[in-house]
Each structure stands twice: as C-alpha cells, then as structure tokens.
Length: 419
Ligand SMILES: Cc1ncc(COP(=O)(O)O)c(C=O)c1O
Image (cartoon, rainbow, N blue to C red; front, top):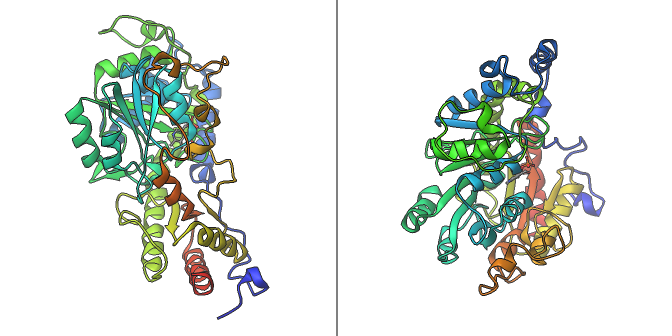
C-alpha cells in the first residue's frame, strides 16, 4: 500500500475536488432568457397590480404547489424569512418554546427568537436529524411548535416525530432548506408537517442567490404567512381574507429572482437523479470498510445525496482521517472539531449561549425567568460526540464515476493506515 500523501506519498487525486454548488452550476441560457424577459417587461416588483396573477413569483408558487402537492405556497426573500413567517403563521410568539435540533443552520434558532419564542435544543442521532426519543423528553407545557430540519438532504423520521407531536398538539414546521426536492416514504419534504420552508440561497439544490418558499395545506396558516411577509399583504393577495389584519415585515421576493429559480426548478429532477445515484454508489462502496460507520438512512430514498458524512471511532481519528483525505485530494473535514466557528452547530451560536438579544438584553428568555433554559456543551452532548466522530465531504450532481472511485480509493487507503 502506498504511503499516505500526508507523509509524502503519491496522492490518489491531483484534480481539485468538485464544488458543493448545484443549481448555480447549471445557470445557462434558459435562466438568462427568463431574466431578460422580466427586464424587457419592466415588471420587476411582484405586486404591481397590472399582471399580478401572471407574475414570476406567482408562477414559482404555482410550480411549487404542483411539485410538492400542497394547496398553498408563498415566495419569500430567504429561508430565514420563510421560517419566521411559518412561526408567525403557527401563532408562535412570546412565552412559547420551540424545539429545534442542535445541528442545523443558526437561522433556525435565530428565527425562533425573532418571533419572541425560546429555542429548546434537542439531540440529533446518526441520521444527522432530530432524535425523536430525545425530542419527546424536551416537551413542556410551553412547547408550541417543533422545527424539524431535514439536515444535509436527509429526511427526518417524520412518522416517529409526528406520532409524538400529534399527541401533544404541537405544530410541526419542516425546515427543508437543505433538502429541496427530497422525499420521505414517497411524500415530498415540506408537505408533511403543518408548514414547510425552503431556502433558495446559493448552496441549496436550486437557487435565486437569496430566496425562500413556504408551503402549507392550511388556508389560515397561509393567510397569516402572507400578512407577515408583506405589511400590506391584505391589500393585494386576498379576495377572501379569513383573519384579522396584523403588522407585517417586508420579506417579498423580486420578479428577477423568481424568474431565475423557475428555470432551475425544471432542471431539479435531473440534478437529483444524479446526486441520488452517486450517493447510493458511494455508500455501497463505503459499506465494505469495516471501520467506517454509516446511518441506515444514508444512500436510501431518504437521502438526497448532496453531502457525504461518515463516522469513525473517535474525534481524533476523524480529524486525522479528514486531514489525510484532504492530502489525498478529497477535500474533507471533521464536522465538529471544537475550533472552527461552524454555525451549523449549537455551541457556536454565540448569541444563544449568552441568551443575548439585539438590544443588549435577554429577550425572550427574560419573559420566563422561572424556567431556566441552559445552553452549554452539556445541553446536547450526544450531538457533539457524534459530530466530532463525523467526517464530511461535499458532493454535488457533477460528481462523476471517476470522482466516486477517487473517494473510495482514498478512504480505503486512509482507513488502512489510520483506522
Ligand atoms: C437548515 C437551514 N435552515 C435555514 C436556512 C436559512 O436559509 P437562508 O440562508 O435562505 O435564509 C438555511 C440556510 O443555509 C439552512 O441550511
């Protein structure tokens, strides 16, 4: 066996590793034509009364509704604003607690505090998504909602989660920011809970640079989200408003962004066919490695294939393996190394640990001083232990069979030397 590249041996690969981007890699003539068409029409604000129903944003909402099978959709300007609108739609506010996984993008936690509610952290399991058993233990009489995150393109265990939330009357918001186009037992992610939220930021499956989408089957929740996404939402959107007016923000999406995304939605199935196929092959190959651990869900229907994570015995080995793989030409990193300020991991959410609001105080935690909620390394120790054993490699649809061979060869080489 060759020496490790880390120790002066020949690397498995000298070509740079693939980018992690997907939809933006496919931007081309179709998107250009759509954007230029919007410019030609000079109709760049969604809610111009003239042509309201034919707007690009309406078209994007219509496509999402038929794509996901939901009754309602609302285009917004980010995944974060989709989450905030979803929380407001569900009536979550001051005094409420919202359970969120300890491994998600910081926006999930920030959105909860921005509506005046308190995030309650919950462990993930080896699937990288919320652990339903731990989730059940974190429920209190204040728990109003759960944000379940389909992290790294992996579908959370929705049946187990919904069995618990139904029993307690808890609203379920699906954060499918990283799993746009994913499925769970044949159902589209985002369409299973009360409200589904997507991000269209550049590192997502399809992108408008910045953008988001909210979907639901409830007219009432949709109307509440619409009111919140636009302070004057009730002027434009409803012929039949079922709810009283309340103040909103401006989370509107522009026509140019919607047009850009429409072109990509058409390409999404072929992007995802490729990522699924690649991931299946990689997981099959890795299963031959006795010292590499995988969750059963990896490489199945419930895995979009947009990222590769595997586990080794401990944090030291994960660090060494990631370093050695990178030297072999496969860019890899230890998911939680205690040093990098990765904002996907709760111990790096500085504002949360300090319970700090934007005005120097402790809102919304100060609303319920009698229930002391702690955020520390001890809050979700299983999550930290798991992520410290985890090695991550970015994937996208452009990963070719030769790249898959390189991953498997590099892992086999590194495993022989280090595991
Ligand atoms: C899991 C998750 N939730 C929410 C968001 C927020 O989306 P955005 O950046 O579009 O506001 C992201 C984006 O990275 C995410 O990964």
